[in-house]
Image (cartoon, rainbow, N blue to C red; front, side, top):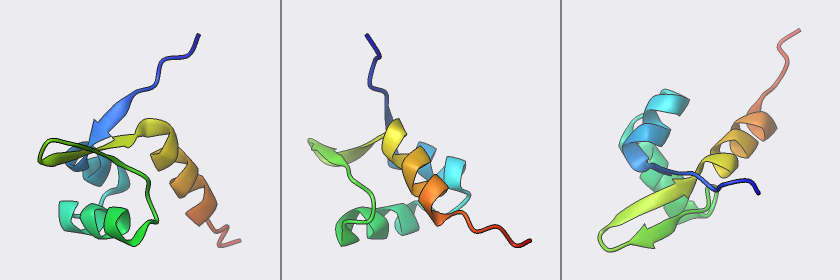
Length: 60
């Protein structure tokens, strides 16, 4: 059985090499799914990799 791993906004930002505010904007815009845990968000690691895969463009 595969385990579901969640990342914090800071971890997602570091992984994507963007600011945490960019991650918050993506979550609020619905571009990146997230769960709210008390006052913070957790993003499924699988969703981050799927987003990066879909956003990838081959520059040739």
